[in-house]
Length: 390
Image (cartoon, helix red, strand yellow):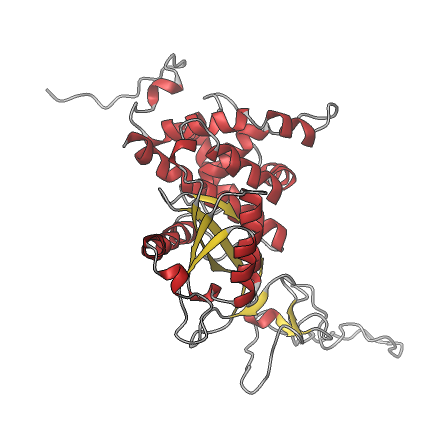
């Protein structure tokens, strides 16, 4: 029998949002872990906000919404707010009721920038990893480290000499015309005349620029769009781009990222950030840790700092002038570290393809750092339902 295509017209709905979500949906386990982590950060949230004034967006809901934006590759806050209007799954995950109003995108952005600093993003990641179901998955002794380039939200045309001012055509739609409409001094007109239409000689906002033969470096040039971005290329034969360096520290058992950072792009930033992340993750540790890395970390100063910190450098050896000898490579653990060290590229690939970090839409190293760390934390959350079900 054919059913009738008629709208029910029901005014009220008595079905709870909890009943709308499938029992085996992956977001159920993710939400459980996130809620437990945010509950442990209650004291940190209290320290950020004052006890008077207009109530802001609850920090728990704001962080859940930001994680949701990363997990589902939503490109902007405006699109996130639009989808939360009609997506019951999003409302359930964030904590909004079916009749609760959705926030204005600009209000959400201002509240997010005030709360989600780099320090708060690190606390969110640490709280997720310290969850009672997640902590047993981590290794305390064996780690991997690597870095990736995060393309800045700035074009190569904005990379101009530091002594130069605003680039041509960047003044916006209100650029002054080349010819004035009303000259400063005009002789008095006795008879009315038809004023000819002025001809504007406007400069385009995106002019063609030829960089051939021009030598540009970070010492003499800087981006007028994002001064924190640096011109850098990670390997020979590739083009240099304006970017940041995003290093990460991963544990070696299940491949979960335990620390993240973001620095200016230069040749030594990765090694310095690796030491900082190790000390931040295991401060004052006296255990013999291991750290797997690629050939870019085979530097005498870096290897000496690792040994001084009781860390065995399982670093890939260079073909010439390597600081890693047979005392390290003869052990089975070295071969295992070299076997697993490429797993960190999976976290970078997820952060770029799903988390939107292939090219950041934020400017300034602090804002990009907080987003990068939160994206790495979201990458851990995406893997938890399968790991915890195993």
